[in-house]
Image (tube, rainbow, N blue to C red; front, side, top):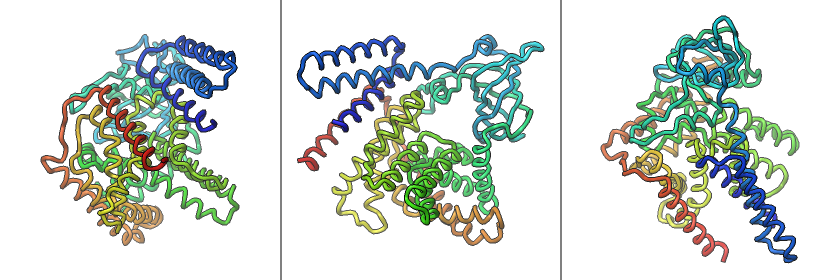
Amino acid sequence: MTVAVFYVSIAGFISGVGLASLWPLSAAYAGLFLILSCSVLACYFLSGVSKKRILLASLFLLALAGGIFRFEVSKTGLTDQFLESNLDRQVILSGLVIGEPDIREREARLTVRLEQIQIGSEQIPVIAKALVGTEIYPRFDYGDRVIIRGKLRHPEEFDTATGRKFNYPAYLAKDGIGYQMSFAKVSLIETLQGNPILSKLFGIKNSLERGMSLVLPEPHSSLLAGLLLGVKQSLGQILLDDFRIVGLIHLVVLSGYNLTIVGEFARWLFSWLSRVPNFIFATLAIIAFALMTGAGATVVRAAIMASLALLARASGRTYEMTRALLVAGALMVFHNPKILVFDPSFQLSFLATVGLIFVSPILLEKLFWIPERGNLREVVSATIATQIMVLPFLLYATGAISTIALASNILVLGIVPQTMLFGFLAALIAILSPLFALPLAAIAYGLLSYILSVTTWFAGLPFASVEVPWVSGWLAFLLYALLSLALVRYYRLHHFV
């Protein structure tokens, strides 16, 4: 019964958030489902018959109401009345840079928590966030208080390269951003006004990136920064597109592998402590790494799951990966309901993880004819499993399919751990002495060159990526429903009989 309550509660809450995300449901609908939940619960008590399904139905409706209400609450704080009255005008604003600057090829993008707007000679307080596009130089950092001059507007939808509409306003709204300014003039007021812990973590990250750039040329240092820290924008749009075409974009997006390394290293470092302090320090290391790398959806999901694995080990309990994934998803959606529908990285991360948990074991059994040497069978099964799970979503979101993802992953994934190891050591030593880091950097350079060569060569093939006709959201949902039914049927027949 306890397990059923766990799954039904999460299913109801996620369903409520999903419904409120897709349709304009007000808080009144939450009240309606709450009344229905109480009515069902009354039937449970009045009937005098203990029927678990009635109780679970009431619980599902209650959680559904909670999901709708939570999404409605998250919609507040995106706009400000004074900013709304100055839309599409040249304005002077002041605010605090609250995230790491996103440095692109031609501009820097700053996430700014707006604090004041200047109207005439008066400074009026405002409460909102804006994405500010400005020149790359001068450079700004997290914690800088700045003055911004430019045209204030709301974000707008735009067409992607494949002709799809991208809901950019909702994508930014998931981060609480309701405004956008392009080609703005930004000037510095004062520095070091942010959270001191985050400032230190970002400083460590910047030092590592600087160490990479001292001993590795471009684009090798940017690729290493992507592998280790998830910093992919500096690779440039052309090279990023190449990684997407060949199905290797996941290399420069932080995953559970990075968090596992951090957690295991912290456990080894504090192995002289007893079990509980060891768990605490290892978990803090995972949290610090997640914050240092920007706390995106993928890394947060991996951080929660890695922390739960450490907790299970510290408490002597069995780690259930499926339950950990659901807990991670529920916590993330409760914290920020908008990511469920409007954050592609959140969706892709969970779909890929579901593929690794449920589809990959099936393929491992079926692909017995592939040798296990060098983890080849595991790489093949994991690649196919994740591709199967993300395919309907990619067809809906992008309309493009990588035809050589399996081949590129087989050729590259085997050397990624060694690349990360030598690259990290080289960057770390280069901070103190670039000369002593050169031998390790030379090895990392060779491995990174191989990855870049495979990526660019495969991306240049005329059939590397194939565009397909538009797939609707309903068709993608139907494909996932059929895939889920097939998996349930398979596991019932082969594992629970």
